Image (tube, rainbow, N blue to C red):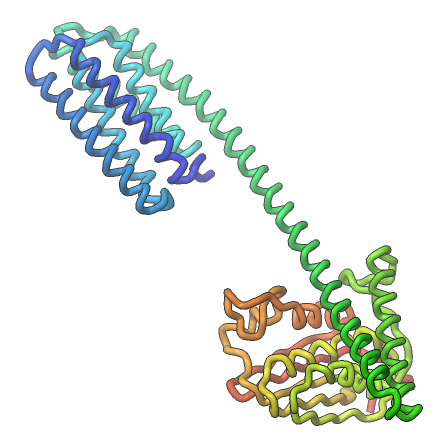
Length: 413
């Protein structure tokens, strides 16, 4: 397992503890009668190093915003030397003093490194205890009995075991919380994508309805019956699409694949694509539109193909300059229908092509650009139809190829 806490969390909590250790150490220096000047010098030197180390690590942590992983390792090395200095400085006191210092080192290791810190923390605690016992014997002439050493080291081992178990439980609990947080984030992202997809489709359909209604109202005296019927047909078609969207939000029937309802019917694919192209007319800005739409009767989900075409053509209009050539072509490839939408605009940078099909990315791929959803929705629809989407981009233009299976009622040519 990894560390129980991040570097910032560790050092933010350890820094005040070092200040407490400095105050307690100065108090002990003032209250203790040292048997020789060497131990007093060692104690004062330890206090001075503690003060400097506390200040430097605090400044380093603040400047790095407590995110530098090296803070954990450097801080632990500082603590090892400081705790060893305490053990030597006050070795002439009762052995219980060294016990507390050794336990502090063990807790420090587990606190910083989690379960992995238990063994090195215990071994360093043993070293600190043995050094203190040796110095205590040299200074006072009192040797720590073997039973005392065994008792101290076994107690230290028992505490290490208890702290390791607690650290393991805390780390496991933290891991579960992280998994729950990630699951919640995924659920929220899925919900956000669903809302964005629905809003995207509502916006496109309503734009066609409003545009056709405005044209019928403002030009009703100049429209012949055929043109008026075409506008009314657009309004009816887009109204039915909105109706289908509402129905899909209210239920999830057995015909849903990949979260999208697929309903096949036999119709002329050329007319389906033309309707989608015409629905994007309000975004066309003097673009040179070229259409290759043969009459081709086939069975597939024409409404979904309509959505795909409208999104691709709409993207081509939006992300290219006025006067750019935009071509839309349909052809049959065996039992597959291929839809190609091509433009000779600025294209998509190579590093942004993979991200262009992700949700909330626009064709430029910039991190600070407004979010987009069209190409991602196209990919989802094509996948639900059992087809493939291929994006070819260069500095000289963009070509999007959509291939979906279709039933033609005859043998493939």
